[in-house]
Amino acid sequence: MNDLDASVFIHLFKNAYVQCFGHALQTPLSETESRQFSNHIFEETGLTIGWKSLKNYSFYALNDPVGKKENPSVATLDTLARYVLKAPYTDELQRKNKESHHPWWFRYKEQFHRQAAVTSPVVTVRHKRSFKTAVIAAVALVCILILFISLYRFGSARAASFTEDFHTVNEDSLQHHGWMVQMKDDVYWKRRVAQTGGLTLFTLPGDNWPDSGKATGIKNLLLHKIDGDCFTAEVHMSGFMPVENWQQAGLILLEDTAFTGKSLRLSIAYNDFSGGAPLNKEILIQAITSLGSGFAKPEEVAHKHLFTVGQDADDLIKSNMANTALRIEKQGNHLRLLYANGSFENSAFKEVVSWQFDIKPAYIGLFALKGFVRDGYCAPVCFKLFRLVQCAD
Image 1 (cartoon, one colour):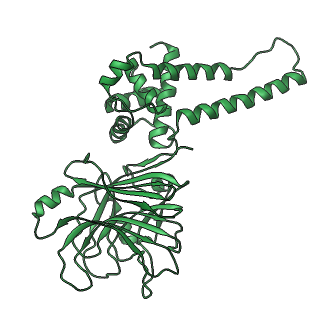
Image 2: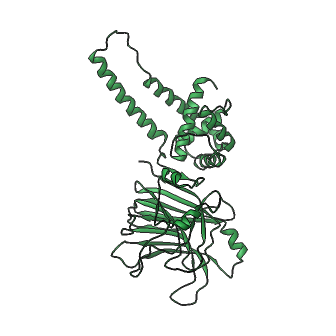
Image 3: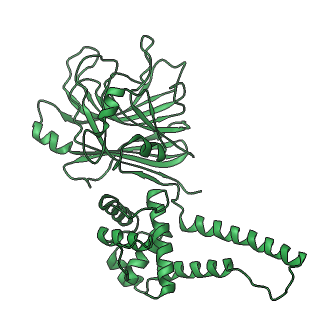
């Protein structure tokens, strides 16, 4: 790879990093980050770049003395370019049959050199800078800015994406990533590091369910702002198996932080209560909507039975709850809720419900709660990953 191609490659790699993690590359990738980067590229393109290669590329892109000279294949360069430019999903066989000339790498390289040519400083042979020259320079600068913005929007339509792997859960890191904690319980918040490689919340007393006799609120509610009305959000959890009534954890959408506006709560929950009537003990996926203050009754829009505790084998349930995930897809007023569970991390999402609901959320949150119950078990919930992808304009 010549010096010119090396410059393009470094620019391309840094662009791809921003697209995956939502911020500029500043330090070499860790193993966890490299694996996440590799998985995201595969999910978006259908093509594979090994995590060890991505880790080595990060050293090279930062000119780190630990990094060695890299010479990625044209196929690897094409995969990175396909990821950044949002090429259609494919696989290695289809690319070999239809695009073996690796057009996306050459398209990206052409754009890079075209931009570099436009942004190169122009040297005038005149010994004086006239007013006319200054005007021309100003116009050229405006054109450069317009071109840069156009290329950026084309090349990184998913720049609004945000991924959090909770590799570091100290407060400074969480704040830097845009998280804020509501109703902090100091005792249990300090135990957020209980499980390595994730953020641990506990099913503490509290609820956003309206109750005239109780103060609405969720302890250690972790919130992140949302911009726009079109997005996909998902959270991955590890080993959470609710065992007592009203224990649950998952995602919540809020129009405000005081619970006065509309809300949507999607959770993995436990239930053995139905107005006092005998009911099987079940683990379920539940979705609850609230119209906000002035509306006393929420609405259960989804109640998806997963397991009957005490009838299904406990070991089988634990195995199937080893890796769970929830997803909310929103396009305007249309919402689609999905879940996944299983012994493997890559189990497929399944739809729970799809319907219309007029909500304009300003925040999305991760929560764990057990309702307005003072006694009972405060179960740990390990959140392994959160991803928010907002639709391109």
